[in-house]
Length: 250
Image (cartoon, rainbow, N blue to C red):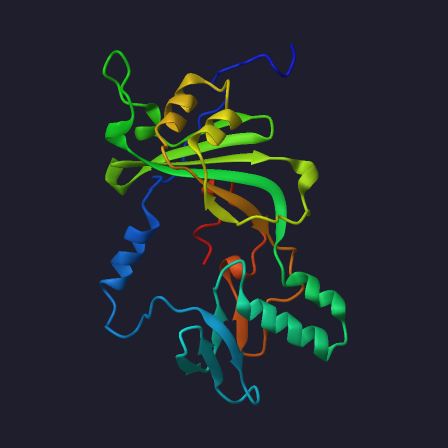
């Protein structure tokens, strides 16, 4: 049997000891925002730099909008393009006269492209017997060679989140010259998964305006903190978001 032969069969069914809860991240965060005192959280901020005169002094923060703040401990959860990580490792490279530390500042392209889309459940055609697509009631993963598709419902079952991954392993470590995240034509997505099982194609045809994501990760960092400055989440972790994991590390 050749690789090109199509085999559409279920090879595993996973049962969790606890219940698998799916939710929209923005809705999840809104629960916290709506239950914390006013002024505790500030949004729409992008940290540009930090400085401190000594480890015993406060850390001074400078934001892109021109505002400033101080803190006793700086916890950097500012994403894979972390400005805190960049400054922390630039300072370490200078202090230790070790330019090799600079390689940990920039993320590395994995050679993987992800396509994402949200589909209102009512837009997904029902079966001839009136049944809903099975991803509406159970999370699904469809696997192929160097590609897979993950789908599951969120927002109390009103929306289906679809994320697909297509990897060209030989391109790992190459420079990705385009925008990391951008919209693309539906045809690009459909062509990438042409010939997959009908229920996958049915989902992808419902994504009218997919987005394309160049998946990057980090080299394993030699250290995560320096005195009262620490990195967490995507600013430090080199995990990849397969099965949509790693979105909850922070």
